[in-house]
Image (cartoon, rainbow, N blue to C red; front, side, top):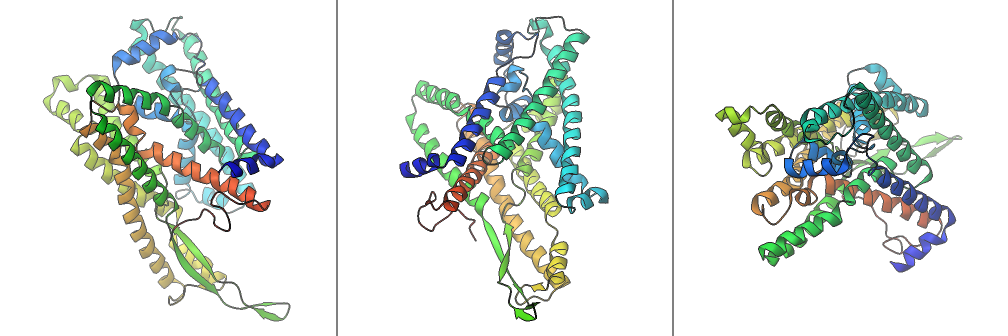
Length: 446
């Protein structure tokens, strides 16, 4: 490994890309600690400690902002409005033929879609910014957290700061993609999650030490490695469908085309199902908590209890939502009929399967089986934090539990693998051994 690190920094272009990426991420972390003008940071921290609002919408989105949301900094919303806008544009492609045609027009079409995504980011960020400022004023104004005048001037300044911060983050992500290494947006999200690990580990160690149960620490370490291994298998898992092409005439000579394959991922939807399911399932509980009606109605009180992380009804509903969104989002991203038509158009076929509808049905059946088992695997990884909360409520803080599975760990593993592939390709291109040495390389399992 030491030789690999030395080889990485021997390559001037790769060294510049890595150092530039680190530089931008450091700026991002500095910006996450710059509060919006008019905010008393100390009083704000005390408010969240006293509020104990864990498990709500605030904690869920604060995970992706690297703690900037609870600090009410200029990066309070993080990069999530851009992610949400991208998901919405993907969903609209199946509704509006114009967007679907743009996606097929190559670089120019993608440029136009990217422009629409940025417009959507500004719109979503403005709406969420007003909602966040209103929520902050309504809940903590009486506690003296907002020190300055909370009139229209403060609201306008806060919203402009939040929107500008998100757009700057989006620009920084594009810079990392162009001049750094890997996907810049994903690296920013990963940095926001990873930066919370040391504090969470320290808090967990203190709680385990106070309770006098060191065996819990060994169980958590073993579980962590098992979950990481499961995330790697889920991220790299691929089913390869062999494809053959007939001979083509090139310069008057029949030339055979090399056999290829269609890669079908076990988890084609990525972490999108967990994000959708989490946002949907925590929203009712958060609304009940905000309107304060749960205390006066037995049914609502029981419903809020059922929707609390760690409870069996919550775990079951959460798992079913993840499985549903796995099938839903996979069907949007992969259309077996289009794949079968393209194969037939270019003279390709799957051995033993007739072109056309039979190929489409075969791909649909294979994709459904992969998605079914992949969705179960993804749901199991996602509910691990809830089981940890249920089994070890006193030893493991909720923030640490969410770092053991679900979206956070899948993002860390997926981005880390993608970054390793980027670095490995640069090393192999310059005749250096990759991370696995020799002729081995990182690849999907099949």
